[in-house]
Image (cartoon, rainbow, N blue to C red; front, top):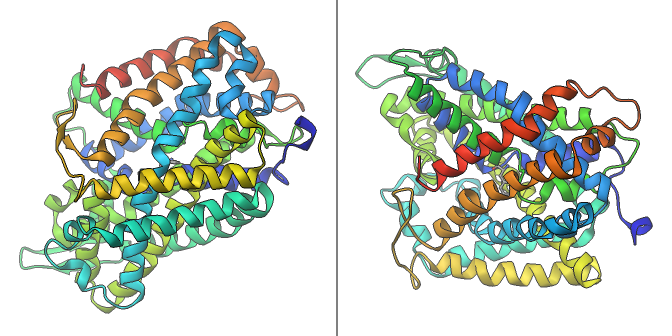
Amino acid sequence: MESKRSSFSGSIGFVLSAAGSAVGLGNLWRFPYLAAKNGGGLFLIVYLVLALTFGFTLLVTEVAIGRNTRHSPLSAYAYLNKKWAWLGIFGVLVPFMILPYYCAIGGWVMKYCTVYLTGRSLDAVEEGYFGAYITGVSQPVIYMAVFVLLTSFVIYRGINKGIERLSKILMPVLVIIVVIIAAFAVTLKHDDGSGMRTGLQGLRIYLVPDLSGLTLKGLLKVLLDAMGQLFYSISVAMGIMISYGSYLGDDNDLVKGVSQIEFFDTAVAFLAGIMTILPIYVFMGREGMDASGPSLLFISMPKVFQSMGIAGALLGSLFFVMVFLAALTSSISLMEAVVSSIMEEFRISRKKATVIEGAIALIIGVAVCLGYNLLYFELPLPNGTTGQILDIMDYISNNILMPVAAIGTCLLIGWFVKPDMVIKEATKNGEVFRNESLYVLMVKFVAPVLLSLLFLKSIGLM
Ligand code: PHE
């Protein structure tokens, strides 16, 4: 079985595929909002420091587990230590749960792509357009189904012909679009009667650390926000990096690869801030900067594009195509984590496993879409919001399963398997492991403590 395992053709294929996973909706609709809310540059600095320490630790650990065991997320943990087999169940449950609702959101993105590319961008700014769209019965289901099919098609074709080939094309295209829109955002100017606001002023708000009224408690909040965002953004605790790591060649530089993935992910998140915060500031002022998630993407951004006139219709099209690329490569990685586990557990072919998982995702995806109409209800969640099916699945996976999986992974590696396994795996061709003692300290103590804080915060206990 092991000798037949597929692998990426080289480091670039691995890095672009993993970056494709990491760069997703989180980079686009949450990072900018958190930065704007948490003192601009202050958040950026905290995020960067965490990425180089905490993020590096988690990412290098998962990729090394994958490459060392050459197993799917479901069985990799059991291979390392029988008593920790339960972690493998988390490793596959998380992507299994996220995939259907990620595809539902992917469907919303495709709908907006279609609206913009067919020259109907004015529709998207009508009052209540987004709400009316997702509460419709058939269209969201159809778009979701197309998104599941696209994802399945890539997985069906396998690692090299599917994931790797696609990522090598889509990721550079994504970067080019992001740079174009960000560059344009810096040049914006608008006067709505209350004075001229410019993109450069917006850039200052985004970059200059705002320390006014900062307290220790406030700083802790910034830290937790940055950590939660980073954790989600680098796609750890979703089985994905174990799965991709298991296809990484032994002669590839793992440490360098991990650094490149983090660089890619952080750069796109940073540029996403320029792309969204600046235009929103210019056309809507400071109040507009409070939007995040779907309302940022599907309500605020269309308004901003409309204010730009003709250029906005074009830029809006580019923007939604870019969001689509980001979402697609992330959903592909989710499905790969599940499919590789099904293949291994039931000893069936990739094609069969893909059809099975595609069908399951489709069925659950239908329920998620119907959660806004036929199956509508409101459930109060521990974090103070009320949720429909999508929010509940998102809450359970992000706030409960993922932190527990990540804490478990750190404890298993830090205290039972021992960090040496990861360090040896990452340096087996004589590579330099940055700072070994920092890694040991992080994986044994710091990361589990930070993740526990995050867990307490996400279940509303802090
Ligand atoms: N890292 C992704 C992001 O930032 C999150 C993600 C990846 C979600 C893969 C699902 C699947 O948006």
